[in-house]
Length: 370
Image (cartoon, rainbow, N blue to C red; front, top):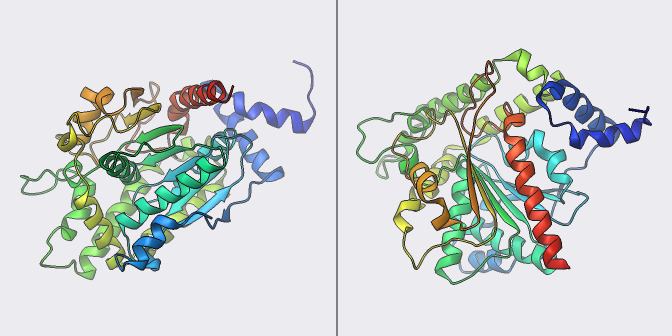
């Protein structure tokens, strides 16, 4: 291959797919970030009808609104990211940002730390999707763990009102769609780490003590640190300064969520319907746009063995998403197993199905525009 100017060499970042080139892939990503950094800026949506209506009727308050961050991409298919409990949406997709930006802008919804309103968040999605559709830029909505559950709940509510959201596609990573996904209703004690973290919040008559909240913070910290233990693998993914920024972001998020904020998030998850509960002709499909559901090979730290979401999407995903595909993400031989929603520590394992999906979505968008 002839020598390329530095700027041209950076463009090869997007095609360095093969496993043997992983360190080189990371080098180009870090170099591009240094010389052509993206700007992550607060974004004020111009369409706010649905959310303002809720606040005006006294059904929620402004302080429960999720903040929106925007990064400007090069294409016309934006991505709306909803993260799990931790890390927040921006950190969750940290190593996927350059990939997303090839298709369009990124909109990351950052949940309020002092409170949470599922109704308000669904209204924010209503408004943001309507705004993007009016601009001719139908988005992919990308939900991770609890965020994937929010996407499912939002789609279910849209279906109940007879609406078909103006989306380009849906991606669900390790979906946690209801409380039964992490804590079986008939269980004496939780079988998962996440179940142990949420259990103190489930008694409506006894709000969690500060000690219980602290124990939950410890569980989330351990879950993150478990993924960060393989230092050699991490050096292939990001620079040490990037890792430190990521760890700082995650720890700040864990420490910053107040007891009330944690309680209201748990209340929201408790109110969300299990996918098996709306396996009904009148409520399905949720949407006819392309959909991708990704499960990790090791979901057992988070998802209960009898998880309704695992059962629904591994056995009947086409009922929910007629254009849907389900993949189990597995590590290469000799590498550490892929854990729940491990988009940071196993980004290379998640990239192939994501590339295929986004290529499909862009092709459909071009066909519709022709």
